[in-house]
Image (cartoon, rainbow, N blue to C red; front, side, top):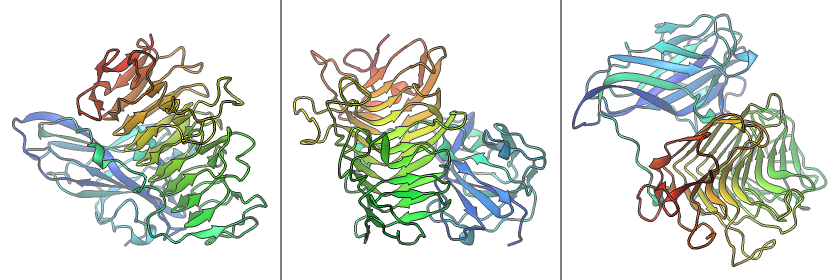
Length: 504
């Protein structure tokens, strides 16, 4: 393969023609189904789940993206590739990338620099100067002539350009295809397709290496401290297949934590933290995958994962105050850049005495407190408390909320809550709020194709809140009426007993 100065995203389309009862002209906006960065400096490292597609010329980094498109009943009349640069000066360049075709044999979870596909030699499109936070388009009609598999490579200037990945939320790559088609909304997944306690966490059969206090961490140059906790300050570290009776504090970029049993700090923590703590400004593109996070000593201070710029997939989280905390107090506080996908969480621990709330801990499976680019998808979240732990009350077994979105740390935006199974919750299954950082603005959320249980806390005479929205005038919810009851599959509607309720 010729050595390019810089290679940016590789775009792939996978589909088969779909029969339609009637045909009409339509423009399909197709989001990426997979993407990955591959880096020359770390040729065997898998970087497939970050929120930014990193690209550079020296050392070289490529970014790969794949799409699934279907439904065209005739050859597309136009196809356009859309990518958006990130909000960072590093995304600016005076000489943008060139677009080529490339091979299609790669997957997000396994592709590396060493296994990257070869690209073609004909330039399909060329971009000049590029700014940050800008959407760019490249025509690909000459290649996308039907449904099928199509791949592209962007080769760019030596100073590098960075784009939003699909995991960043609504700013990810899009393929616009104009063709004759009939489109239908995607179906809500059946309950049987969601993660479970046995399908998440450390994979069955994995051999774990126990790491104690003042001990080396296998596969790295790191060592735990006297308390058994691990602080990561080196970029690119991979933590794999360990059993750690401590917490992990991430303080660097491009860290991966996978296939491990993490038990949290022995003292439960003394300040707000997580079994995995990613609140530091140095955290970028943290991958948290297939781990079991069960606190050995629950406390009022301890969540499962807490911070920003992380992608959490396939994890099992229990015995914490919150399972996932999302916010960013660093820099301009604008971007949280978090993906929470295909996880299982339940059995939170409530304490009657709390350092924040006078009525005890407010236990949420996911608490979003601010930031943009947040995706919560394909999870099984059970909003219930852990029996026999903390101040458990069998008469009130539900946790505070399953998912709560608020802006008490910073404004929120670009948030998608989609295809989750959500059961339990005392205040609500999904609670969309407005707080001090967005009281004077209209906030838009995407909440679609989720399955809701009917087992929220009964506030009296059957009054429950599966989906609760604080303010009807200033909170706009896209896809609201695509959410369904888990037991019947019927759509929720607005009304006291119909699943969707407004506070005012």
